[in-house]
Image (cartoon, rainbow, N blue to C red; front, top):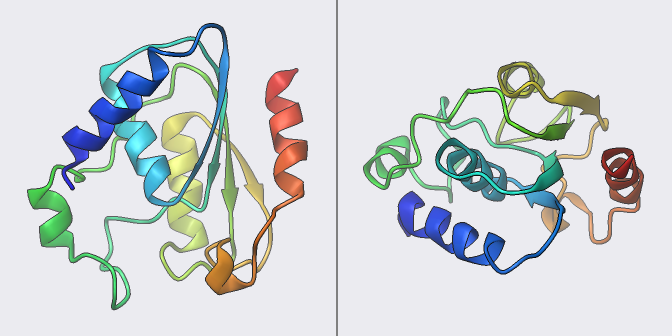
Length: 143
């Protein structure tokens, strides 16, 4: 699906919400939110951005090629400072992004970086289901 279609879907959802919002996004959802934030504004109180992928480097097998991402509008990855508070949760062994690349994304976005350790891509394939630590980060964004 095109990035634009996903961004428009996010915007349609945001328009249905009355009041401040805390967004929790993972992986491609982070990229989607970054593109949305470049185009739209809403009453976002904060965002927890977990395991953003590095679309500047080739992705592992089973993921789209960079050419496909670019053709569908996902590249380049937005790098402007976000107009809301954000926390980026970074893994030291994420197969979709090096810690260094995620650190740079957090700097570009004006986000607080939290190193959550060797948690892979923070998904079921990495052994995760529920992620209780996310509640702590959400509470940080609420205050």
